[in-house]
Image 1 (cartoon, helix red, strand yellow):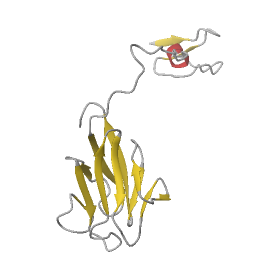
Image 2 (tube, helix red, strand yellow):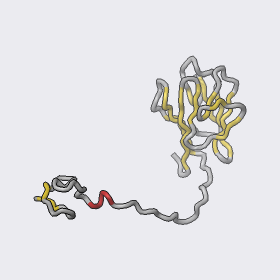
Image 3 (cartoon, rainbow, N blue to C red):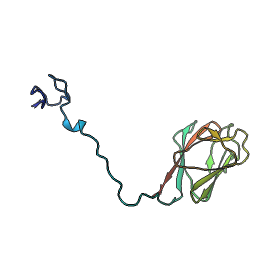
Image 4 (cartoon, one colour):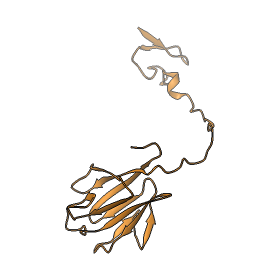
Length: 150
């Protein structure tokens, strides 16, 4: 079966993507413009549900996911840490994440190498936002939140 080009009338094989005569794309839906959709309903941000996780993106545990369950989550090299990162660059008690009204609040608890959020060393407390990148020792972690739960 052949496909006929709408521009020049040339016949091409049925699996051809472009016309063999003029070079135009044979699938007209591929060049269809994208429609802009208007928002439906309220445009306000849904209330924070507390459902969040850390995903290791760099380090020997790359790909590991840690659900941030509870009002307080500890991160460190101590085996009792909620997020256990076993590397000498991570302090035993490195970071505490506490659930606040707008998300998790990160607090470095005196780590030797410091804690970085989006490449900036933290001083005091930082309220995390979805998509923030944390660096704890040599580990890089992505902070992900969900308004519907994990």
